[in-house]
Image 1 (cartoon, rainbow, N blue to C red):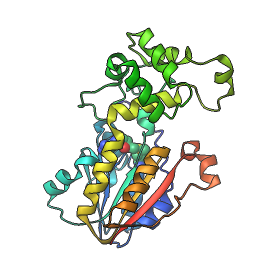
Image 2 (cartoon, rainbow, N blue to C red):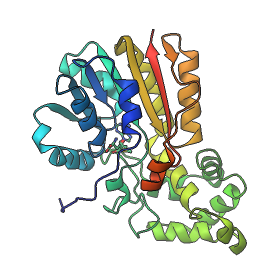
Image 3 (cartoon, rainbow, N blue to C red):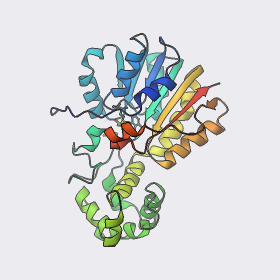
Image 4 (cartoon, rainbow, N blue to C red):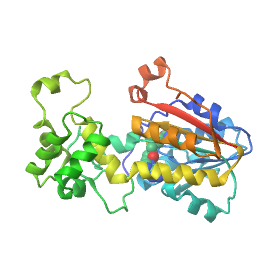
Length: 295
Ligand code: SAM
């Protein structure tokens, strides 16, 4: 693996720790280890007394975390697994009760910054976008095999690309076969009038890329499955803390905690990062933190 030092900047670390940690010698599961920033912070905040189980579905990213946290590698348990199957991980470890589950949804810096995984429209890469490199469905499949209606629906719903979703889907279908991210960017671009491209604060391909990534990885269903399983493992008073980056993710999380009788929602309004954090880390700008407690 190539040398990699430009680590992911972990978001809202203090707020996460404040909500997540209820006992120092507890068991905490970081369901999205990424580059290990939050896992390390959880371990340190508990003065090394907690057991931290750190899970990620992407073994390349997990490799980065393990290397970065070399000195803690015998203290933090790293596992390659999807969080929606957290019950299998915990059963394998013989863990029956947990004090806190943490999820940081979205994409890690390593995945974005060009490792040939197709998450970014800033580099020309094969259309992949799988978080789990062993999964079958790729962006190539979605872009080349889905019907125009299916694409349009995904881009509308998951991308929240309300006005242009149909046109983008049409242009993608017309441009087939599409093999690389730049080919996809060109197809998306052709759906927009120049004035719209100029008007937008963010790159015109952002929303469509996000939509395809969510579809490839089944992200929304995975979140619901995982939240439901957390309820079976949490100690009374144990917490779930989630950082989300998409309004639909936040809606799923809020609705889940409001409707599931096992939980009290601790954040009626989501917490957001401070202005200073956003200045230092613009990727934090759309983050929302929600926390809930097991009754
Ligand atoms: N908190 C991390 C840190 O401080 O470095 C960054 C986490 S990053 C934003 C999100 C991570 O979630 C990615 O590494 C991604 O591979 C992982 N991920 C996405 N879907 C997953 C799933 N279903 N199960 C487990 N991990 C997943």
